[in-house]
Amino acid sequence: MTLRVGVIGTGAIGQDHIRRITNTLSGAKIVAVADVNVEHAHAVVKNEKIDANIYGNGHDLIQAAEVDAVLVTAWGPAHEEFVVASIKAGKPVFCEKPLAPTADACLRIVEAEVTHGKQLVQVGYMRRYDEGYRALKKVVDSGKIGEPLMVHCAHRAPSVSNFSGDMAITDAFVHEIDVLRWLLNDDYVTAQVILPRNTRLAGKGLQDPHIVLLETKKGIRIDTEIFVNCQYGYDIQCQIVGETGTANLPEPSSVLLRSEAKLSTEILTDWKERFIESYDVELQEWIHSTVKGEMNGPSAWDGYVQAVTADACVKAKQTGQIVPISLPDRPAFYDKNQFYEF
Ligand code: NAI
Ligand code: NAD
Ligand code: ISE
Figure 1 (cartoon, rainbow, N blue to C red):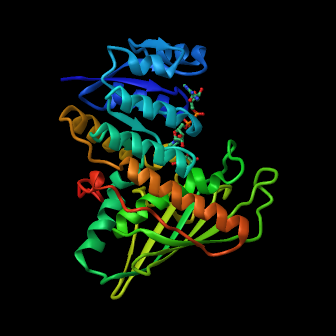
Figure 2: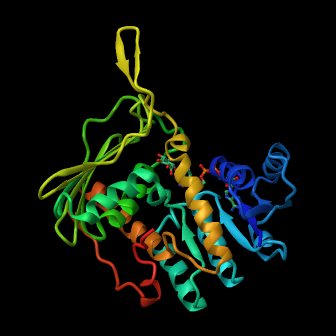
Figure 3: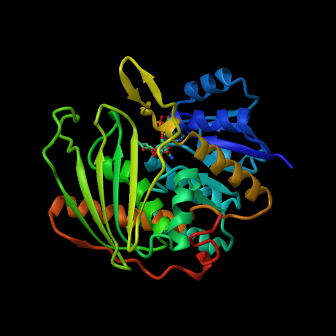
């Protein structure tokens, strides 16, 4: 069976996902696209040479008979209405991160899914599908470095033209929030944010970098530098310090170059390239499991936990305080795929 997918939001990542489903992956085809900017949707369909119906409204796409499953790649504030409408229509929905910009909105999605009674939502946290993170998780789970005690991370991007407010936390750091709780099989209990000297290269009124300190239920301490105008590259670092050793996220493979009296390796500059294989694996697994009627990836509950944690980080930044993070009990509905082992 070929999964017939409708895409809502034909911006940067929407186009990327359309391309990978059309040209790289198997088992699915794009049959419909929608964007608030309809001309843009027309241009994407034309440029990508796909045979897809174009809708001016995401809700019409969700209701369309030719659409089996929905891919939401609109900007964050539009996610909730489309995810909830997909659930109500009984259609599987892959939603790009963040599931929604606020914890309340994520909780409404969780409630809609639990009420519907079948898991239909997957959130686009692709780092769980990254070969490097999966290798790191294997090492941690094997006990080779003993119990994890501390984690040191960095999330660096060369520059971000579209960031405002606290998006360094709510748009970029959310990837660490998700992947670290998966990696450690743990949840967070407190957040603290330290603001270093500001770079002169941040946008007007924006803080950059940030240091975020998270504490987990097991007492693991995580420090992350988020530096989204670092200029030199898109550089994701993660080191786990355990009782008997340390484990580092592997660097992306790169040619070791001896030239012009230098020994060097390239540093990637674009997030699309850094995690290109993870996006492919993530969507391929989503296609396969959706066709089988299963849902195995990051769930709406994971999206909710990420949003609660991000809210606490933003509050910690605003107040300078250590902010407690409290979550309601996870509905049993989500037990099956909690930290699903790949
Ligand atoms: P974008 O701004 O390039 O594209 C968003 C598109 O959605 C635009 O074409 C816009 O017109 C459309 N749109 C917005 N509201 C809409 C609505 N109500 N109905 C229909 N279309 C609507 O944004 P980008 O960078 O593609 O990001 C989209 C989503 O993907 C965001 O949630 C972002 O966080 C996520 N993302 C995830 C990444 C990842 O690594 N997983 C990387 C980049 C983005
Ligand atoms: P973008 O601005 O390039 O594209 C967003 C698109 O959505 C635009 O074309 C816009 O017109 C459209 N849109 C907005 N509201 C809409 C609506 N109500 N109905 C239909 N279309 C609507 O943004 P982007 O960079 O593609 O990011 C989109 C989403 O993907 C965001 O949630 C972002 O966080 C996420 N994202 C995830 C990753 C990742 O690594 N997983 C990377 C980039 C972006
Ligand atoms: C973007 O929205 C993403 O999700 C990328 O993966 C992230 O690392 C980048 O900094 C964000 O802008």
